[in-house]
Amino acid sequence: MSLPAVASTAAASTFLSSANPRRSSFATRIPAPLRRSLPCRLLSSSSSPHSSLAPVSAVASQAAAGEAASRKKLLIFDAEEDLASELAKRAAELSARFAAERGAFTVVLSGGSLVKALRKLAEPPYLEAVDWSRWHVFWVDERVVPKDHADSNYKLASDGFLSKVPIPAGQVYAINDTLSAEGAAEDYEARLRKLVKDGVIGMSPVTGFPKFDLMLMGMGPDGHVASLFPGHPVVNENQKWVTFVKDSPKPPPERITFTLPVINSSAYIALVVTGAGKAGAVHKALSEEENTSDLLPVEMVSLHDGELTWFTDKPALSMLSSM
Image 1: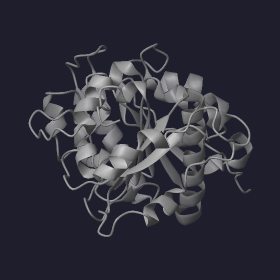
Image 2: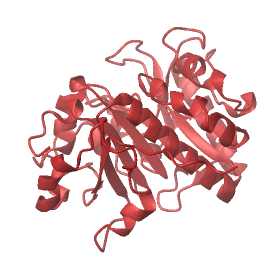
Image 3: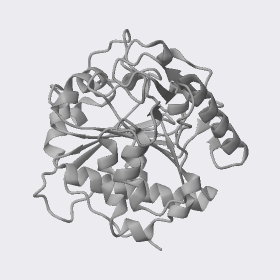
Image 4: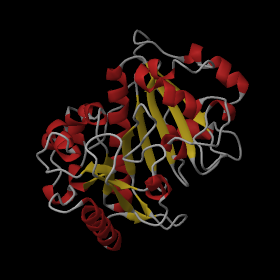
């Protein structure tokens, strides 16, 4: 079944390059004329209903010669409703593409407000149009609590999204909540390795780490992604696929998390970051100031061979003078 086009009337689309593999830089990588023109390219919620974002392929064709294999885009929305609509459209397009190419679509979820942003996928036309039987769902991080606990990312996703779409139960990969943090991380990695062997999850020929089709992530006000917190030793883990945290600065203290090499091996990442409360971390991650010391985890998200898209709004960018 073909998917109908969904117009986005409240976003500006800008390519971000990735010359620095350790930092997701923004303003320093965008030509000055484009930076100056960006504010006037913002489309308000009252824009013409025929206004829409260019398809990824169309935007990519406009990129300068020599654009790195890793691509970054910034989408700025006036309204959260428009963000959710565009996120659903992108996810559905990727689902159709990977299901056709690979016979499976591997999706990685996180917690927080990200799940709410997925709600449009559980509504027409996507509820009927998406081939949910191809979806395999994972978590980029999870709290080591029972699955029915209020702090569980699994419960959050199940209540807000998974219970509303017909993904086969055997293709939703929650952690084993009967194990310790260390045991749960080892078990989750073992299950991922089996799925790679079975051909469900791809492998990156560039990094040698698993390559998930789509990661859907948020960012904390401190710039953390997954359960990778600023200054924590697990940020530097570069051998394991999944590791554990027993002293998270944000409760609950025990968690498991994908490592940065796994995150950075993804084919696509949608990074949903909205609200003035995130403006400080966004400023550090995307400002013109070049500072390679004390990098926030979000600054270390830089795909080796894929596309990273920021789904954001003007309050989150409020501290960026160039915006």
